[in-house]
Amino acid sequence: MTALLQADDVHVAYGRIEAVRGVSLSLQAGQIVTVIGPNGAGKTTLLAALMGLLPARGRIAYDGADLAGLDVEARVERGLCLVPERRELFTEMSVADNLVLGAYAHRRDRAGLRARLDEVYGLFPRLAERRGQSAGTLSGGERQMLALGRALMGRPRLLLLDEPSLGLAPLIVREIFRIITGLRATGVSILLVEQNARAALESADYGYVLETGQIGLHGPAGALLGDPRLSALYLGGETG
Amino acid sequence: MTAELALLLAQDGVANGAIYVLAALGIVLVFLVTRVVFVPFGDLIAYASLTLAALQEGRRPGIVWLVLLLAGLALLFELAGRQRKWGRALLAYGVLPCLPVAAAFLLAGRALPPLVEMALTIGLILPIAPLLYRIAFRPIADASVLVLLIVAVVLHFAISGIALMVFGPEGARPRLLTTASFEIGGLFFPGQMLLMLAASALATLLLALFFGFTLSGKALRATAVNRVGARLVGIRPGAAGATAFLLASALAAASGILIGPVTTLFYDSGFVIGLKAFVGAIIGGLVSYPGAVLGALFVGLLESFTAFWNSALKEVVVFAVLVPVLILRSALQRHGAEEEPEEDGL
Ligand SMILES: Nc1ncnc2c1ncn2[C@@H]1O[C@H](COP(=O)(O)OP(=O)(O)OP(=O)(O)O)[C@@H](O)[C@H]1O
Ligand SMILES: [Mg+2]
Image (tube, rainbow over all chains, first blue to last red; front, side):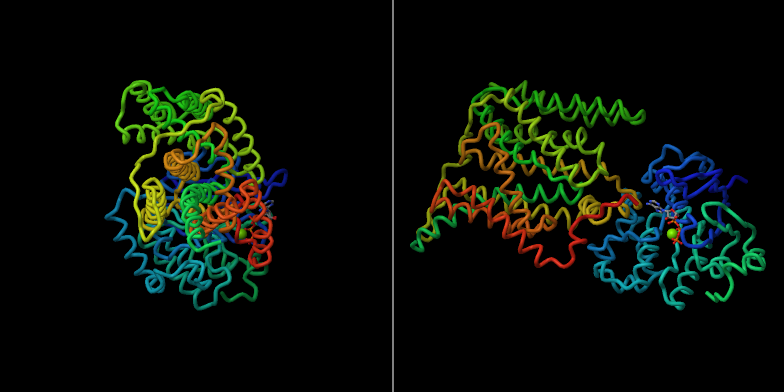
């Protein structure tokens, strides 16, 4: 079985400084794979490279085909969707408009749009209540839901999530993780970047630990959770 | 000043303001979507007017050479730039701009119905802004606002040079679209003035509907609000930019057709019109469409009233008012960072 996403020896540099240095990882269809690591490890940079937002050296294959030469928009059209760390919402536009634009890559399918919109509103009833409100006036948790909802409107096959729990209250974090694991059942594969290592490993199948641009440990999520080297560093007092 | 005189001046000011409204909307639209201050916008207004006049006089308008030149350059850029999608490049930059040019070669010299003359004028102006975007701005889309502005200024001088060659130094004045006139409540309204007001109001309304209710319009707004977010949902900044410039062309063509019959325009008179519209747009904040409409109307009124007191000073006052307005704006502005559209690349 070929992997849905296969990255081999990926390097990403900001000018002369390499932020990602020879990262290889793979993700099978239907899996949730997590990349954990401290601040500045290069997690966001790695996702940007996978998405095509930053130029990268090395090979990135998605669904068996090399992604080199495909721009961001072409990757979105192929079902690769990113929920970025900074969310990048259309703040001056309504919640509904943000979601409708999320389906821009599938704009010719008008009938599908309605159904998809209802699905996302079903997943996030809070967004349905606020559909007319401008995105800039949403609370942090609601913004996170909108960012996730907008990405789902793009019918992802592989969802790249950059710290979905960032800055959220524990109750909302749990809700977000519940939704993320629920997505797998609908056939979406997920690459989950998190600092909240415990929560991420508890929902993932496989984990990679990224430190200063390089993969240190990696293995099945359960094994990593019990790994003493990891618990000392990241799982310490954290409860998620 | 009597009330009657004030009304008369106001009427004149609003009519001029209506043209500035169209131009200011185009300038704001292009700026929001691409961060380009499109200095040559005013030039296109003058070219539209000169083109319409040439068609009415049975001459082949010089603009055809400008369109052909720009289309050729854009095509070269496309072919040099990428290997894929040659067919689309050929269609968008080779075939489409040449259609109105071909029509101009076929039809020029014959007596044409006014509507055909106007349609042909619009057709000839439409490709210019998108072609300029493709040639000069798209390759440096991520440059700073200042660099883009400098390029826009250079572009203005470059196409002014070409315009002098293809249009010649003579001014032209197309016929009035209508010679009818109306009297309402003691005030005398020439039909042309009403047309200017109506066209301006209609364009504003259509633009509002486009942005509010169509997916393409929302995609343009999304690009203006957050370029990275727009790319992440699959909106190509290049395509959004091309659409914005196409709309700008349409607005410039409409402005030129409307203003031409009331002012003699030369190949280089568009610049000042564009500059005044720009002042209006800045008064309105440069990032707001309603602001641009109000600012442009204000400039029209200001111009008409100062022209009454001292016609030599009318330009001076319009540009001088920019200084207190900018001081006032920066004093009132507490959220300066939000005024500029997203600039960072990631
Ligand atoms: N635009 C940039 N220019 C230069 N260096 C950058 C840029 N963006 C990130 N870096 C550097 O690259 C490294 C990796 O940053 P990155 O944002 O990928 O880390 P991260 O793992 O996502 O961290 P966090 O958990 O804080 O989000 C950091 O040292 C950072 O300073
Ligand atoms: Mg990060």
